[in-house]
Length: 253
Image (cartoon, rainbow, N blue to C red; front, side, top):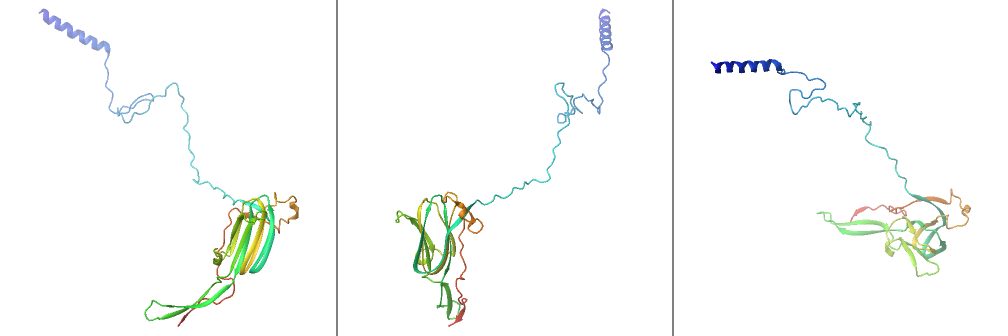
């Protein structure tokens, strides 16, 4: 009897404790969180919206403006040029004759530009065709004369053995066959410039910077006597049009 009373008292105590603590209703499966809530649905990969901490301030996000073009136009860099004035010019038909001038070059560089008109030679030569039945062939050859050449030499006037430059036209002298060339001298000296050739007509001119080489630059007409030279002039290999000669043709032997 005494044990039964004790069991009844324990059950009543448990019921009183439950009533005093209140009844907790479990959350619904699709409950919506408030602005200060934590997760939606309890998914760790979707933490949901969190409350803004008191030590930061909400602001509007920065809007990135997409440029209309991803390319920027860069103006081309102009070629480096300097003003030079012509101090000498000649046109001569050479037959082992030579022309020379001197100039005290104090402010290099000096440019020498020339154009040549070599003589042409025309002759026939024969060969055996490799095509069956064609036999021997004769071809008319038209080319620059092997004895046409032109040479420019720049040496020290005080020490003639000191040659700063020697170049020109013609295989007879070991040179190329550029019809137009611009030669550059970068040394400072009292220069002697020589033009030499054979079986050829040449026009040559010498150009220097007026400033630094002349005390009075007003003696030059900047319109007719001076020009701008590109920093790296190119040579020009001309076609075979020096003199009027027949066009190469093929004839049967």
